[in-house]
Amino acid sequence: MFGKGLLKGMGITWKEFWSEKLTVEYPDKLHPTPERFHGKFTLDVDKCIACSLCANACPNRVITLNKQKVGKKQYLTEYVMDIQYCLFCGLCVEACNKDAIHFSRDFNMNQYFLKDIPLVLVRREAPDEPEEEPEEAAEKPQPKAKAGDGAAKPQPKAEAGDSAEKPQPKAEAGDGAAKPQPKAEAETEAGENQDLTEAAPPDEAPAKEGQ
Image (cartoon, rainbow, N blue to C red; front, side):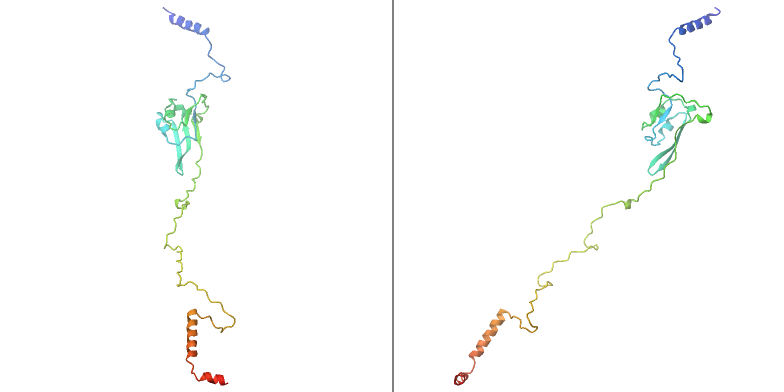
């Protein structure tokens, strides 16, 4: 029957005319977006280690990642996404092992010029490489000096009679004063004087009496 499709279409229009309106006055009003909405990408630079797992997981090769080695770590210098080719599949978000890249709820990514369409998340210069301190310059405990390596050896104690200083006798008045004799020598001299007295001739005694 001619006009059957037209009547069917007008019936749908008539039905939707009385249903709840979903149109809002954008941009003054926005529709609420779900929590897992795939919108504009955001990148946490502090968590990113420039491992390139997200770039390798992208099926359309949208992600361009540049890095530079600073010291012993990889430093992210540029992270650009050709968003016009992105499928918003979320494989890059799943591949990140540091949870650095996320979807946001912002869907307004329109640009007037083609050159402004790529999404630039990071573009910065790498810092200067830190001066590496030599390992030998690090403070290490010095080994104790062994005996015989130039260290001062302890001097052995002087034994009695070897080189010990003997007490000197006190000098008496006068340089030629007689030094005290040992006890044994004094007894010997006293005995000799007694023998000489006993051995004197007997004739000398009467002579002394007559005088």
